[in-house]
Amino acid sequence: MFNGTPFHTIHPDTIDNTIYHLLNITKPRIIFCGAESYNKLKYVADKMNIENKQLAMKIVIIDGIMEGVTNILDIFQIQLQSNYKPESFKNGIDRTLAILCSSGTTGTPKAVTISNSRKIFEFYRYLGESDIQYSPSSLDWVTGLLVLITTGVYRTLRIISKEAFSVTSFLALCEEYKITWTLVSTPYISKLISGPEINAKQLRTIRYILFGGDRSLSETLEKMQSYLQFEGILHQVYGLTEMGCGATCNLGPKSKLTSAGLIQPNIRMRIVSESGEVLGPNEQGELHCHLGQHWGGYYDNIPETREIQDSEGWIHTGDLGYFDNDNYLYIAGRKKDFLRFSMKMYYPLEIEEVIARMPEVAEVCVFGIWNEIDGDAAAASVVAKAGCQLTANQVLEFVAENISENYKQLHAGVQIVPNLAKNPNGKVKRQAVKEEFLKATGQI
Image (cartoon, rainbow, N blue to C red; front, side, top):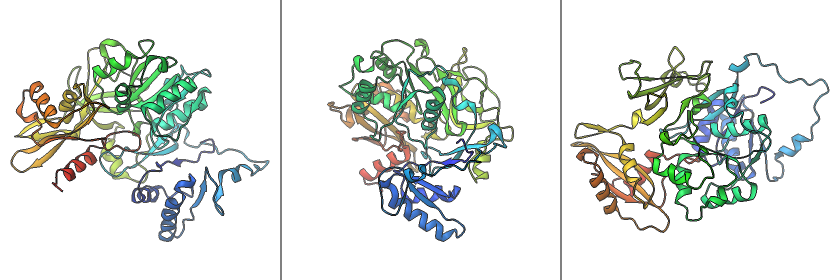
């Protein structure tokens, strides 16, 4: 960062073909990885070095010891030259600081450039040396980058764990390290309240819980709030990787618990109709955001960049939502998530919110199963809470009792599953869940 060299991060659990696809975009000169990922990265690097003869990618391992392979500790032994000077940043805040991966929920991840902007950390100026930060997000997500930078800027202590997020591990970290600030995906809030081991004592030191990446139910947030010492600890945020920062934040007013909050400084937002008309309060449309500065787009991908950002610099998020009369943002779902059954349009989220009210349900994902007569018939994969018995018929009956419209019923069925397919940072991959459902029901 300080030398002006952009870095491209990829999650170590990413499959070989996707790693190859991503590295072929940026063509890095040096790859840093853990020893456990070395063989996978060497295979990809060797393949790319052969195909791109001018490349000479070098691999450095950052933990573990492998004979004949450069270790990060070897590099630390090298003395800087006496006349060394850091690079001068010619493009200022518009230079590329990092290249992250898009979530990949709709297909192959893209390489998203992040600008060298104060927006990454300036909202978190309430942090100080007494704070202890933790986030399970890896560095390929903007939340992981945000925690890395805020730790350096505000001199906090950061807890880093290789263990995947679980209720048990999170609560143990809270107890051991007295965590005061945490940033997690919204589904993790549901996991926490579903765990029988959670109690207020374990969470007593927490002052801020930031969460985002998905919508949340008021019942879930109220249950989470009951374990916290004070109101105003839960902060729902909205943003996207392409922005490199949070766009809105809800500081936890009880009357607007499910809102994504108010627009942050130096960010512009608007709600736009299908015809391109800018809408007013309480009118639902697509959410557009403007950073107020240059965005480098998707690395080496002008067509995809032009698809998401217009000529005036507005980023078309693909998210549907509205602002209320107090300028609080509410997210209604994804623009491309809508389905049609019997010529009527519906959103999976509408049905998910109903199913999530069942006390036995921990997680739910609704998707459409297409047929040429009716269109997209709704189906659901449901995860039951630990120790709870739940049947598909119970879910079908609950939806029938709580949703009157026939086209929103679960005509394609329900499956009770042990877990939902997610990307490495905890976001549900709707298409992957659907494919597992189709396999289990013998449809593919």
